[in-house]
Amino acid sequence: MSIISETESGAHADSPWAPIIFDALQAAGVRQVSYVPDAGHARLIRMCNSAENMTSIVLTTEEEGIALGTGAWLGGERSALLMQSSGVGNCVNMLSLLASCRVPFLTIVTMRGEFQEFNPWQVSMGRATPAALEIMGVTVIRVDRLEDLAAVMASAATMAFESDQAIAILLSQSMLGAKKWVK
Image 1 (cartoon, rainbow, N blue to C red):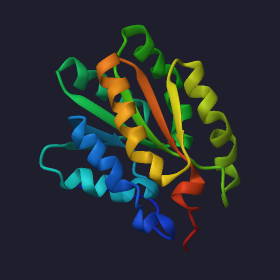
Image 2: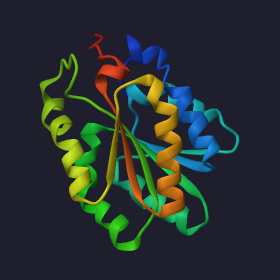
Image 3: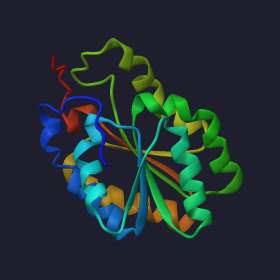
Image 4: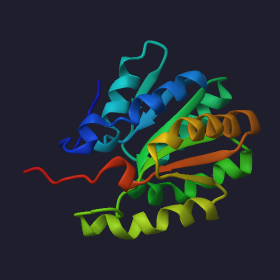
């Protein structure tokens, strides 16, 4: 069952990037996708929920996705964590597990606090997200242009799952389109 906590609107309703990421996850053999409900990832979440060869897991907090991904890897499966930049701060302590154990990790992060942000609470973590991930040993790859996404996703999946690296794909808010508050 899909749970989305915010109303979809504007550019997020169509999410032309979602099928590109979904296809890359399928091609990489990702069988488990975890997420905290997020309108930005809504279309991708629906696609993963509908895929017969994927299990989608709703989280209460983002760091649970790191533990689930580690368990999936230990069980012989590949996983990905979908989160918003505000969730990265919840993961800092758990990210140490990845470096210590050389666990492959792939996360797709929708950025907030950037282009046309309406919510001041999103700005601080949006600014801190790349550095927080890098300090914890995660390789950060930012995507600003839709036409770069397929190649970046394929490369990131190879780096994560073939080289046992922690990789974060940051989807810029200007590429995603600004979220709008809907009453």
